[in-house]
Image 1 (tube, rainbow, N blue to C red):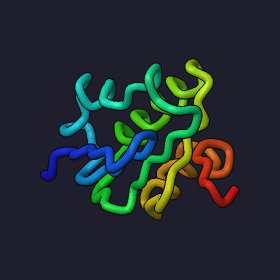
Image 2 (image 1 turned 180 degrees about the horizontal axis):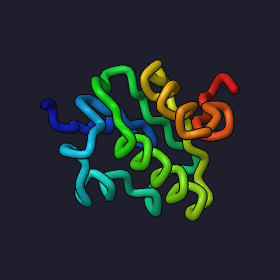
Image 3 (image 1 turned 90 degrees about the vertical axis):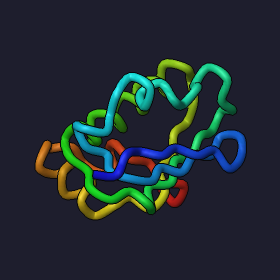
Amino acid sequence: MQNIEITRPELGSYILKGNLIFNTINKVVLNTLDFKQAPSSITIDLQQVGEIDSAGLALLIEWIKFAQAHQKKLYFDNIPTQLTALAKLSYISEIDLFTTKNN
């Protein structure tokens, strides 16, 4: 099991590395992104995400809600196929939920 590592190479940009699964997600991870102090646009790169389960999907949905509550635009880059499949199984359209800068 690889824990989640979240880095911020620049303001408004985050890179997630590791597994977004039930055993690696906690309140610290949930509150890592500071939406109050963030610029109007935030990008989360998911290229280095390994496993993802329903808890990982729920985490990303919570971040989307936090961003909306603080009037921030949240983008996702390099969305893993596993996340897309999980969202579809949950009857969530990738287009409806995960915005990329190309949309």
